[in-house]
Every structure is written in structure tokens, then in C-alpha cells.
Length: 187
Image 1 (cartoon, rainbow, N blue to C red):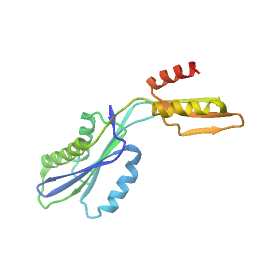
Image 2: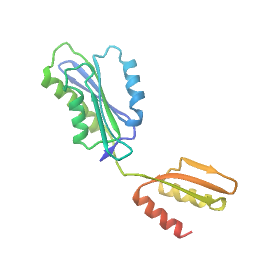
Image 3: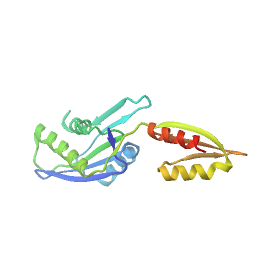
Image 4: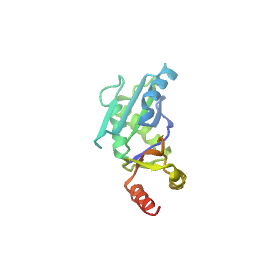
């Protein structure tokens, strides 16, 4: 499974209908769809599909045709996301009608091709399950831990500085946990 860490966009045209597709991290989905509807008030449709993992590591999927005939827009977009095994990401397509009706097959090809084009332009990161870890250390060891995490490219978004200790909360992959345990054993 793979995911994106930033937003990508591509333009695709079929019989003068313009499809502008955006591939974005799921965390940015709500704000992006809202801003796209504001930026493109004359667009015929703003279609989306997304796949994300819930707290039980189950894939949750959803899509919207936004007024297009049922199954002609959101479903083909979702199908492309499934085929590429993309998770924790959303694909939004803004469509401007070009004056020529595309028919069911034409719309499916248009939305599907628009999705494929933006995916071709994107850089992906392999999904690795992360596990929350919390631990407490004395102040004297803070510099060693900071150096280790910086060297390993691990972010530590939450630290609580207490009277004599520091409480850390981080998320690590299984591989990172194994390395971290070795680091702590060698202190």
C-alpha cells in the first residue's frame, strides 16, 4: 500500500470537457474540496473518492458522483485508487463541461484517465503501520535521544517537560521500534 504526503494536480481533456484532478493526503481532503468549490464556481461537477485506514486498520472507502450519472464518476475514480493500492489519500476531480455529451463510457474514461494522469505525476511513500510509544527519561539523556531521533529521521511531536524527567510520545514502525530498543540497550 502507498500514500502521498502532498497534493498533486493534472489536467486532462476529452471532447472539450476539462478534468482537473487532485491527489491529496486524506488529512487535507476536507479543506481542499472546500477551496476547489470556491475556486471553480463555474465547474459542472466536483467529484471525489478516497481510501483511508480507520483505527482498526480497516480500509474505509467513499466516493461521490456530484450529480453525474450514478457510477460514472466517483466509482471509476475509486477503482483507480484501489488498483494502485493507494490509502490515506483522496482524489478530487473538477469537471468543466465542454458542450459535447460524453455518454456513460466517455465519462467513465474521462474520470478514470484524469485519475491515472495525476497518479502518474505523484511521488508515493510506502505505507508502514506505526505504533504509539511513550517513555520517560531524565533530563541528562535528552540530547542523546534528540540526536538519535534526528539521525534516524524520526519526528517527536509531543514531549512533556516535567520537574526532573521528560515524557516523550512518538509513533514508530516495527523496524524503528527494533532499532530504538537496541539504542536504549546501548545507553
